[in-house]
Image (cartoon, rainbow, N blue to C red; front, top):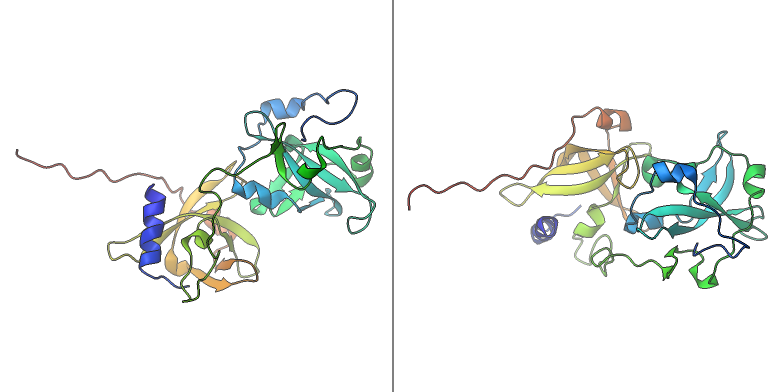
Length: 259
């Protein structure tokens, strides 16, 4: 509720700037590593993994994430990866456990410690329902984002040139070389309604292994990209990670004296 209030104030001030179970003889047993390394809970950000290339240790592209399967508790269990073929023609899909993925740069880089031949040697994954292909899904069908995670916002700037708060929260922060260095988690306004502090998450992915730091609004530059707002900063990922952790601490209301 507090975040919605902050965003409302921000907009007012006009700041411009299945695998269901595989269709095979028996269901594959869950990954032993996944038992100790649980995948993150699904969020709207999880969709960003679909379409990402997967690279091996040498940096060679060996597959592409096609779909994401969630366990019964709503956590990412595994991903379906297209291998072989050319430009999506003649490829096949295999299943990789979440614990086998190494995800960096806020989900923009995905790697596995296996070769293309090892990936292709995995059994082909078959969907219970072909309509689930290309989606985040559970045993019961496609996963739906929680209320409030989808929006009918313009996504960046409206006709008057005012920036949407939805475009800022969750936006990727990039350095001068346009490399991802963090993600905006929250913004705080001063008493005059101007944005003063921006909370940025650095390191990790989907909240796993990340930390929050606070940067000044003046440290960020905003522009319009082809599909979303582009946020850049002169800070590097290492300089952001070296900042002290930002702690969400609520100021307590002043107590009244007397009766």
